[in-house]
Image 1 (cartoon, rainbow, N blue to C red):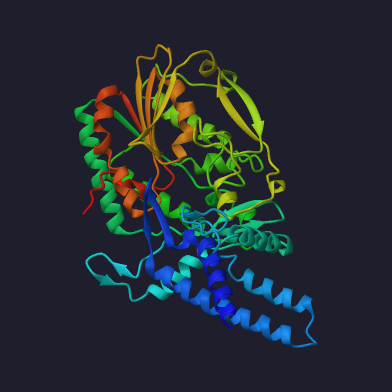
Image 2 (tube, helix red, strand yellow):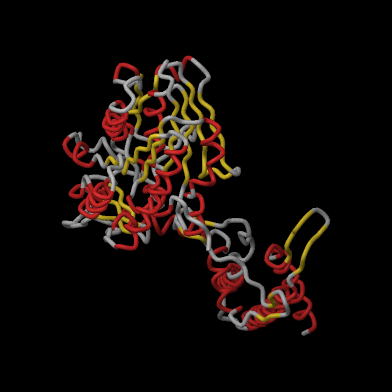
Length: 453
């Protein structure tokens, strides 16, 4: 009898050793923190289970009809119960396969002597998101679901149209609505911007880049999807121009007329391609040239070209499979069935004239500096969201010097990045003749001078 308790204790020690990452936190060299509550739970449960296991094994031994195979199977079954906790993932913040942030550990005892009364649920969520081999299981489930799907593969993030390999994220289904409050905010910001630019002798141009769901609805959606985004955007622009003749360009008509199959927008990403951005550039630069005759227009002969089925939007960030592809957690590059045309400015290859750095050391807030000897005597300041990234490679070729700012807005905490006052020093440094704002939505204009409340 005593032997059974000793064996159970030894098994418990083995369990504690296997699960040490579960209850020991290594904060720094020669410094660890022990979660005694988790240690106690594992120790007590492990000991009781080990005791019961040894009791079962002893009973099997006493029964003549039980085979050794059944004893081994039962022992392995109990051992397998501890495999999930043998290597807990403490470091991962976001699951790429599920495109979501996974649960963080919340202790039982909180700061200021408070108690976490939801500790049971929090612990359960934390363990379910971080147990050993979970990414393998999730990947297997996603692959199985993908290959079983007939026409449309649907996830929590979006869907893949298997008929034409267009990948759609659900946030693209958002429908625009007109509101007087938004219009007032936009007008007030434009007046503030206008006053600043008049004092500094800067001419402002605004480009609203159409999203792909405004151009190619039939290819994207399995059913007829009627959004009124184009209508709402044009309503805002027309009302703004009635207030004052601001230089606002919304090139949706030219993109619709010039659509070349699926070449203007990526099938596995939410952005426009170089070809789409170039068409918008040609419309915008004509608008600028009417005010600045010396500005240079870059034509097709000014570029070299390369073709690939991969996506690149951020300069110098490399090619990838696409944000929509990544959001759905896909693992089938056969859906990348389209080669896209990338423009490479010939002068960019012959001189070191391009500099780039992160703002505040954050990769989603970048600044880019271009210098070309175009003899235009003109300088440009370009500011916008991710749709200005493809645009800048063209627009910068039309000026002698360009400073471009890309800011990413995914959550409300990112909105202060849209405050142009933050970049006033950079504007004063370059002293531009022209300022271009490029956004993928007219609604972004209401955040131009956003202040945290």
